[in-house]
Structures are given as C-alpha cells and as structure tokens.
Length: 503
Ligand SMILES: Cc1cc2nc3c(=O)[nH]c(=O)nc-3n(C[C@H](O)[C@H](O)[C@H](O)COP(=O)(O)OP(=O)(O)OC[C@H]3O[C@@H](n4cnc5c(N)ncnc54)[C@H](O)[C@@H]3O)c2cc1C
Image 1: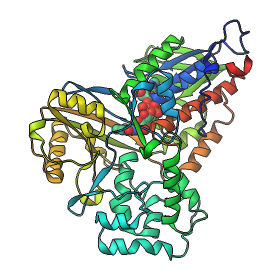
Image 2: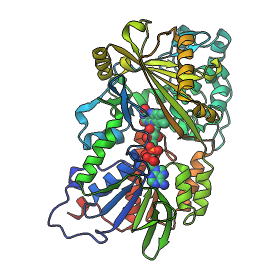
Image 3: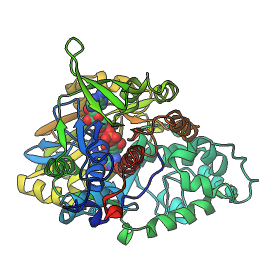
Image 4: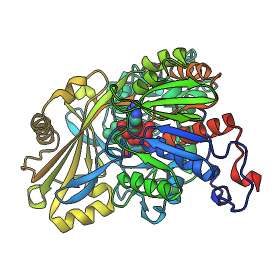
C-alpha cells in the first residue's frame, strides 16, 4: 500500500485498437466501495487495462462517499471534503483526467485564525501543522502565554528527545517546545484533519516527513523549518497556496468520474452492498444483496475500497490476521453544520478563511470556515443570493455522542458558539447538517507497523487489495494514491501488463 504515482501517460489509456489482448485481458475485477478511492481504483484499472471488465459496487444510492455536494440557500456547497492538497499530484491529476482541469481553483483566502485565550488571533506565519518556525511571529500573535512562549526556544538547548519506533505528536511536540504549543496550535490543526487528539495520534503516520527529520535533528524548530520550506516548494503548491478546490464543489468529482468510467465500459452498481468475500477456484465470489436472497458475483480480483470496519468484515475469512488488525483501527465521527445568513445580518468582520478552536477552549465547535471568503466561486454565488455562508465542524475522537443529537440541537450548538466566539447572533435563513459517522480513521501510535502487518496478511492473496483513508493518509490525494497502488497490485496478481508497455 505504498503510495505510487499514477502513470499519467495518455498512451496508457489509449486502448490501442487492433492490439492482441493481453493474457487475462477479459478478467473481471470487482471494486467494493464507490467513494473517491474505489472510483480512482476503477479508473486506473480501466485506463491501464482497457480489455478488463470492471464493476464498482456502492452500498448507498450515491457515489462519492465523503465527497458530496448539496444546496444551502440555493447554492451548491460541499458536504464533506472541500479541497485537495496541492503539494502532491494524485487528486489534481485525477480531476484533470476526468475533465475538471479548468474548474480547479486556489482558495481566495487560506489563512485561518485561532480562538485562543479568549480572543480570535492570527495563526502565526511559518507554522507547520501547528509547530512554529518563526518565534517573532509566534510572539506577535499572542496565541500562547508569555511563559509558554519562553518555553519554546528551550528546544534548541534541550538534549535530543529519544525517539522510539513511534511517538504521539503531543508527546514529542510538548517535550521539545512545551505543552502550550500542543494545546493551542497543534490540536486545532490535527482536529481539522483527523478529528483526533495530539496525545493519541502517531507522529510517524501523521507527520512522516517531520518524524524522519527528527531522527537526525535534535531541534524540532530546525527540523520543522526545513520541512515547511520543502513543502512549499513541492510540485503544485504554486505561490505557497497549499490547497485546490473545484468550482461548484469537490463533490462534483465523483459525478465526473462516474461519467468517465461508464464511458470506458465500467459497470457501476449503486444500492449494492458487498456482504461477503470467498475464495473459489481461480478467483473470488462476492456475495451481494439481502441475506435471504443473496446474489453471487464471480471475480478474478477484488479491490476493497471501504472504511476499515466493512473491510475487516469482508476479508475476515480470507485474511483473518489482517482483518483483526483492521478491526482495531478506531474512527472519529464529525458533523458539519452549514449556515446561510442574510448578508445584512452578518456584518461582523471576518478575517481569512476561517477560525480554529482548540479543545482547551472548551467549546463544542472545533472550526468555522468562512466559505464565501475562502472560495471565490462561493463568494460570487453568495453575493448573488444576498447571503453569507459559514460551515462549522463539531466532533472529535471519543465524542460519538455528537452525532446522536438532533439536527435542531446541532444547529443550536453551532449558533451558540458562533455568538460566543465571533459575536454572530443573526438567525440563519437556511441550515444544513451533514453527519459523518466513523468517518475519520485514527492513526494511533504504531499505525505504520499495523499497516505493514495488514499488508503482510494479504501476502498470499495477490488478487485482493485494500485501499482508502485507513492506510497511508486520510486526505483525498493519499486515498487516490492507495487506489492506484491497489489497482497495480491486482493487475500484477492477474499478470496483466500496462497497455502502453504492450504496444
Ligand atoms: C467531513 C470531512 C471533511 C473532509 N475534508 C477533506 C478535505 O477538505 N480534503 C481532503 O483531502 N480530505 C478531506 N477529508 C478526508 C477525505 O474526504 C476522505 O478520507 C476520503 O474521501 C475517503 O474516501 P474513500 O473512498 O476511501 O472512503 P469513503 O468516502 O468512505 O467511501 C467508501 C464507500 O464505500 C461504501 N461502502 C462501504 N461498505 C461497503 C460495502 N460493504 N459494499 C459496498 N459499498 C460499501 C460507502 O458507502 C462509501 O461510499 C474529509 C473527511 C470528512 C469526513
């Protein structure tokens, strides 16, 4: 499941009419899960091996999983993911390949503030996942207290922190630059990406580059400066803007992908849950549909692109050790509450793209995104409709009760925190509650070793592969990378050669 780049070679997709079909060309590959990972796996399979039969199975009525878009106050707004990182190519390339190149946009505002010590304060420039690199900027932000600030430079004189195989982000950062940096800077950023807690999340899995750097660098400040500088120069992160969105919402990508897949002959079946997976002579049998009247589908290879729990259930009989490891990966649930206010009712000045709220502040809300300031296309639409659009995020690992509240309660909690944090007291003209139960896998300390054990557990089944947010990163780009790797694995398992190399 190591991330690999897609070939991106148009020749690989050409289909090359008249070619002799490769061995195993008519094989049937079933992809379980129609989120971005499953769709990307199917795309890569059909582009590289046009003679394959590929079927995508999706349990719900709609494709896309955590990529979805729906209307708020008559404006299409993402319900889940809203951007891709620009520092790695996979998601951007996929969007281009399915015809959305001209719709890729950088955010118009991307600096978030932090609510800390009773006030909204600018996140100091130069930080990397909340670890500061510019101590002057940190001091000017007043984000942490004076004693907290004085503690930070001790990092340069303290003896090296012994790094075991892995360590929690909270433990390492607190040991080097002090607890306040963890509580007020790292927590809100990790809360945004993983909905997790710094003291539980793995440094090796969530900040791999920085963890590697710390193996031969005593100072966290120095290591972070190096990493942050490199990240900005990485491919695609032009002008230092680290994200891209899509005009009309990232949730448009699944529809564009579905059209491209169907056009390439891939069969897509929604409302179809894969219930069990069995090895049969020469391949696989996938059990679908209701238990009393199951349908059996024959496959030569299977890609499981679901979250960890259904993946564990599916592979329990064929790779029990891997299934056990998967079942131990915990998840966090989040709710996103999108509110539309009449413009006249929201006159409070809001700076940048949004506000992060560290848990230490004791509020329910962990982030507020100023949607119409962050995305130009949303700003134009909101102006046309005479509204302002805010999206609030609630829920962290260990707080499953958040999703048990009614929509009305969640909206009320969001409005209460908006009033307390930003002084916004208007009555919204439209609201939307998006619930994402068990949506974000928690990369606990030791996660990378666990993923290695899962990979090992699949060693003897080369025509079965796993992909998705559970393994190598929760972001869309990382999911797409695992999809390409899973597709390559089963293609190898079927002894297929990429189309271009057969030409
Ligand atoms: C609220 C939120 C905001 C996010 N924001 C961002 C962001 O801005 N940028 C970013 O890069 N990442 C973001 N992420 C993370 C990212 O969106 C996800 O990690 C990624 O979309 C996961 O894709 P996936 O296809 O692996 O899984 P999913 O989207 O979960 O798709 C899996 C699919 O499998 C289906 N399925 C499950 N079991 C079965 C079965 N047995 N049979 C058939 N189908 C089945 C499910 O119905 C689902 O559609 C966000 C995540 C959340 C929750």
